[in-house]
Image (tube, rainbow, N blue to C red; front, side):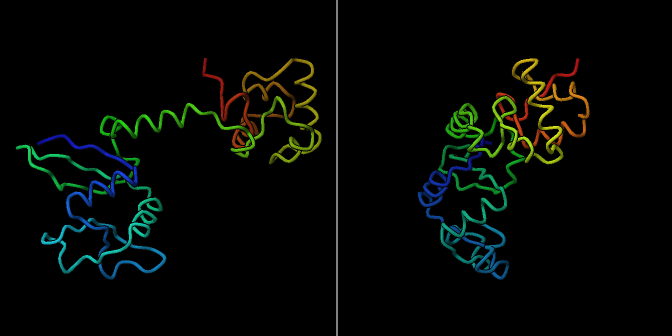
Length: 193
């Protein structure tokens, strides 16, 4: 069998489907105006006739994203003919080796771009002021001041797990703080030794 690929690129999916005469659809009676239900691609004259109903690409992609799906597809059949094979699967189940190269490049460039604390809503322990630290769940004024005192005495944090070196911080509290704060990059932790 010819190899298949996976993508989440909306424009690519739309182009691939329309190039083969397909239309975005859902299973009749399995959705409403707020939820398209079970998504499918309808190729007229094939098995979906009578059971599928055409919907807009906007509705289709809304359901695609809400369900965290990936689009598996095949460009050609084993004998070199244009393939219509496609399948919708959970993104979590996709083998990274099967992801379309363009999607891999896009994901890589997005992961290399570091979000600023303002964009992510996560504060930096090395630059946060007393008020920002107090706003962290489980911190309050005493622990916030302890973080600033530790920073002043020892220099910038290199790792968020250094918080355990401060009296009154245990692993549970540090884990909670790591969801809301960062050191250099989000959720950096010491490696187990």
